Length: 136
Image 1 (cartoon, rainbow, N blue to C red):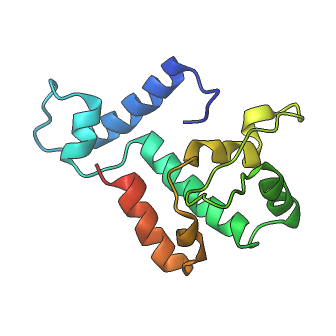
Image 2: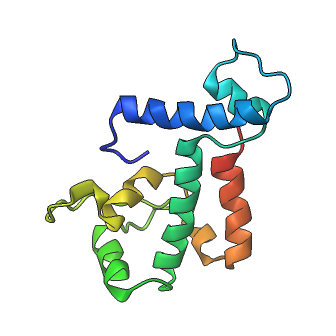
């Protein structure tokens, strides 16, 4: 979830998505935890799905398929070192919206995406991100 989403709201989101899965099951087991229910039905939890969608947005921003201002913010917030192989960014809370700004949300993906993956075509990148974020 977003960094500033409270724990009870995250729990409510997980409960709502689990209840939707339970409605679709023929014989729901009430003793299964919400996380195990998602694993059993091969569905992503809301947190996993959010990271997947954010990684797709990172690709579009990184390859300038989004507004130029977002690309500039990303370049100001990204770490560049000679030994770096994974995507890393820092927060820049100079705006009132803070961690809700797009460039600050990319912190959730720190050290999870290889920089070489950002040079793939979009369909290949989606497959890589599905493996990274949507598999249990």
